[in-house]
Image (cartoon, rainbow, N blue to C red):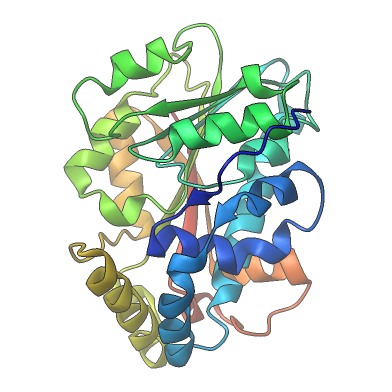
Length: 285
């Protein structure tokens, strides 16, 4: 490990908010060392405002991230050979460091794509995990850009020869349907060899009436702070249509009730499927 001191990665308010809420998942190992290199100070005010709306909102992030990790680990455990893990809109995610060390024979590479943080993360990887750094690839690119395919190939994406596990976490909110179709179309394979997870915000009519104001107000705070458009919302049926349009198919849909039970063993905050507003749809590409 290098003894060179490197500056912390300064996150945007929204990125800092998510990683600050997620911090309890990363108490040890390389994920903990990555988190130690993140400056989450920009998210402090936004966290206070969001928790004034819902004091336990962090549970949503913990459940989501634990579920995504479990999905990827299960896919690797079932694989009959090496895989590449593709993370569009990766941000500050610690997922590569949760997967690569424990699956040295299954993770050929992780490929993170985003418009920011990628150079900084690559430096952190070289600093804290030099033995893995060659398998942890960060590509600076816009996931909606027409030349994304070329950028992926330049980053080492093997479209034809290596099956992929594609994870869209924290991204679908910012992609209207046409952009989501274009992005997913980049990863369609012969024989649907690629697995995909799409984490998404549900439409209001999928959410219990007494819970609808929580995501509306929290995402409203995030929009105001980051200058974003209204988030894109997708129901399971919408994503089934999207995957059909690109030649893929849905294989499962998971509610926040399931995610909470998987992580905690019980349902404290999400007793029924309609009590959550975030879901994960899984499919093949």
